[in-house]
Structure formats: structure tokens, C-alpha cells
Image (tube, helix red, strand yellow):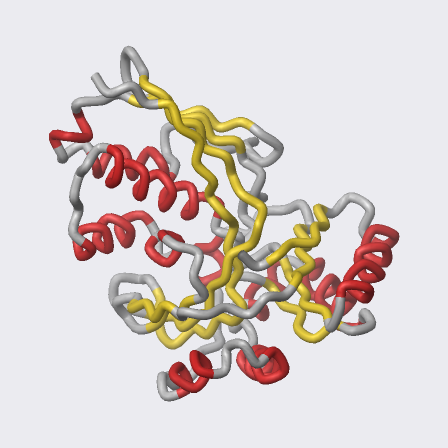
Length: 292
């Protein structure tokens, strides 16, 4: 038996913008979104298990995660049909450093990191089409999280455009200590945008032009914010506060929330913003992060 002892990093994601195009027949939604990743991650420890596969969640944000119904378990159940996977039993311990129900994709990025690991180390040799199918059975954020490139996800079948370059800027993340239900937010969404795939190439070419990028992001927005405000006015208050801070270039909710992010002109203004936030929102999870 192959001895397995490894530590994986599953980096959190942000939707820099998110447009909801339409509701699909399968009850999901066609969206268009720009993904990036930041330098806070869940730690995943994988070792051999003598008996069955075992998943343990620990860490600050592990509270309330179901042991019988979670994304990692879904992945293990799907992989059981591959004989090479079944030659082993695993003990997986996940230290949750990414807030749950935040829009930072914690559950999805854990799955991506594990899928990459199993495919490589167990030599499952899964074709990209198979990987794509596995990811989409678990969630729309899983496949885009297989690498940390800047990327656009769009279309009814979640096509991905990877960017070769990425801008470097610091972000301020704020999690207001409550979970948003993705399902609930999407179900009550009333805002739909027109498709505009013609902008993708231009954005790809100009991705390093930060002033263009900020303008573009402000023009695009996040269609799910209005739906989230209906459930919780705290998000609206937080965004209003962030937008008024000196040097704030972009402020919005990520994904279906509840977390928000803000991008500042420079690090000094970002540091001042953190002080202001900590004064007003003492209990919130507030972090300065780097795009990776």
C-alpha cells in the first residue's frame, strides 16, 4: 500500500463581478463572473486510514458542517467508481480558515484541491472532460478553483476562460459573521443581465491596467446583492460604509455573500480602512489579503 501523508492548501476565491443571465431548466442559473483567489486557505491533511474513509472538520469555521452531507463526501462517493481510488482508504482532516456561507467558496476549493491531489498521486488519469463532469456534479465553483488563475466563468455549461496574466492588488475582506444560503439568494433573485461575451477579449488584454479594471468592475457589479439585501440589511450597511472609505475603488459582495470585499488605491488607505472598520464592526472577521 502506498503511504500517503500530505498537506494541501485550498485558497479562497472572490467573484470580482457576478452577472446572472437567466434561470435554466435544471433550476440552476446561467451566470457570468470573474474569479480571483487570495492568500488565506483551508489546510487539508491527507493520510492513510486503516478502516473507512474518514473526514474531520476542525478550525474556526468548522462549526455546523454536516459529517453526512458535505462537498468532500460527495467527491469521495463519485471517485468510488474508479478502482485505483478504491485501493486506498483516507483520513482527511480539514482545518477551516475560510468562513462558511461567505461567498469565498470554502467547500468548493477544498474539493478542487483534493480532486487535483487524488488524480495526480493515485494516477487516476482523468480526462479534462471527466474532471469537468465531476466538478459540475458538486458545484459551479469547483472547476474554476482547480487552479488560481484569473478566469471568467460564463454560459449555460459554465465555460471557463483562463487569463495568462493577473493584476497584483491588495484586498480588504469583511465577513459579517453570518451565513448566506446560496440557494435562497439565487431563488429570490429578480435581477437578470444581458449576455455580453464580446468584452472578454478586451478585458483579457487590459487585465493589468488597474484603472481600466476598476472602471470595468464598477460598471459590472454583482446582481445578487439586491436579493441578499432583502434577507439581511447588514450587508447593505456594510457596503455603504466601505464605499465611503477614503481611497476605496471597488466595494461589493462576493458570490451570494455574506462576505464583502473592497479594493483601495494604496496600502496606506487600506490600513486606515481596517482601523475604521474595527472601530465600527468590532466582532466582524476583517482581513487584508493578497491576490495570488
